[in-house]
Length: 420
Image 1 (cartoon, rainbow, N blue to C red):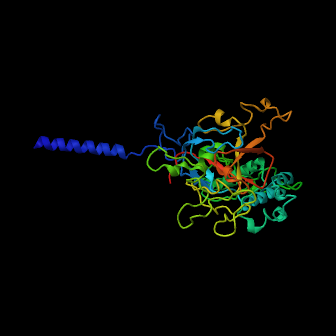
Image 2 (tube, rainbow, N blue to C red):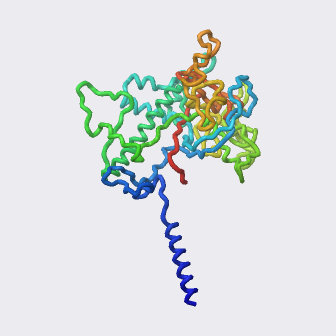
């Protein structure tokens, strides 16, 4: 009996020790602990190495988390343009964030208002969208030239007439604007109070002899290690856009074996809701055929002859709106016909000035248009037939050009692990 009691006590002690060991939380990026797990030295000690406990910042406004994975990049449609520039290929994409919607007129006007106050007149003029993209000698679109960008009735319609260069400038400004708010939070957390902060984008205007008040001076930039520095907003890469648009996560019911792929950002080959209360209604805004931009008036109409308000059509399985139709969208990549074959199979991206250089194309004799200023746009628009709504299709345009059919949205890398 005494031996049995001793054994029981020993077993209890072993269980308690195991439970204590298991209850000790493992270090994470957000909560690394108070000491180094490799050296045993204390963090935030006299040696000055700071590893603060950190509460993850929420994702930037309107951003949706896109879980990474593999997918088949390239067109599933017939190559009607005979370019052979989008062959199918399996690639993998790291998790990232993407805007839930396209940048709308009101968002771009917010940007114009900010840079008009803080930047040079020259920079402001360069940022203005080309509203003449609506003008056509043989169409009466004149009212859109003056009304589309600025009239309140079009506030939440996607901005158009914006070049690839202008879209990138918007991304840089948005980074500064969101970082300003995070800098305020970080400075307040560090000082225990709130301080007035400001920032400028481009060249700040100052009257001759005018001094900038100390309170309006740019806030000291926080270090990346502080955790309050937001990753930069940018245009999505072509692979990211295509991956996010396909939303293949919605086809994974039980395992990784996918019995079908997607032609569009939704299941099936039809452009209408196949079932439910809204059966028969259009899933996107596009041109149905020659002269047919919406169908006859009524229930079967897609609701828009030109563009339509963001969020007017169902989101895809990633929670993203208008990844097909409404307006096509700029992506980050320079255009090359062999991109799908040349780019890496991880986080695929075609940057300019590297491999398959522009000098290899005979632009001088007008035998080719390919150079380092051609940028890819994807997604199909209100003026495109259904073929271009397939995420695998790709087109290109000069980075300084703009049309009434192309807009944009922003993306951002995901830092650390993601928890709902």
